[in-house]
Image 1 (tube, helix red, strand yellow):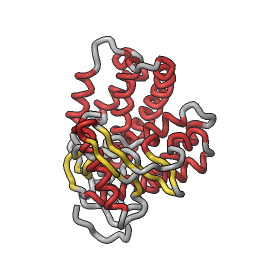
Image 2 (tube, rainbow, N blue to C red):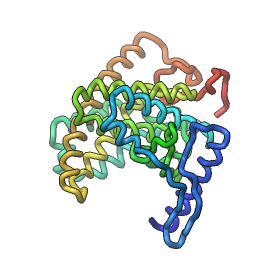
Image 3 (spheres, helix red, strand yellow):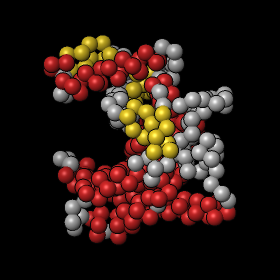
Length: 297
């Protein structure tokens, strides 16, 4: 990796390792040496399967249990490195996506993908500018970067390169999980179970997601994946990714449409609650410590 990337990765692992001294859930591969000029980071060796492998080949119950642990791990990371409240830049994110889609691309012409893009526009007013939690983003939080070692999940790759909405990491992770389950029997039930487990772990650490903004972020990420899958070097992997990605986008489109319709009904029936209210349906995240007492973010 480039020297700058190696330096950032080493510093991020150092930061997580320090947090792990007081919170054992935040386990990681401890960094040992940095050869910055050569782009090499040396860490301790962790023996065990990746979470990606366990999700793909384990039972649904085992997968859900581990995914719950991943949700808790991510939330505790944010709490450890610090949080702030800032507006969700959904409009800018959607503009970047639109600019990246060439004319005639399947996202503009294939009906299910076109519907997904239209839904992002239709629901934009519900999420753009909403106050959400920001932190240093993990940057590559996915099942393949978590190892089950000594009975707990440990991170082997942490970025922390820039600040951003916490929901971006959660969307990235959940889409990877769903893609892993897409080719298994009973994929819909397994996906729902895994998603519920992740949210349970996340909320158990004192942070919450709301349906519309989190699904919006997931659908946005799903379309970005579909935009680039044809250029991947391994052709057989690209084909599989195209099939699973198409199913993921269709599934998230249905979820976003249903959440949007439900939330419109709620807004008609009642006044919008305060942003400080933990039950505010427009908050992507609401920060509370585990004991439920107020927390400054």
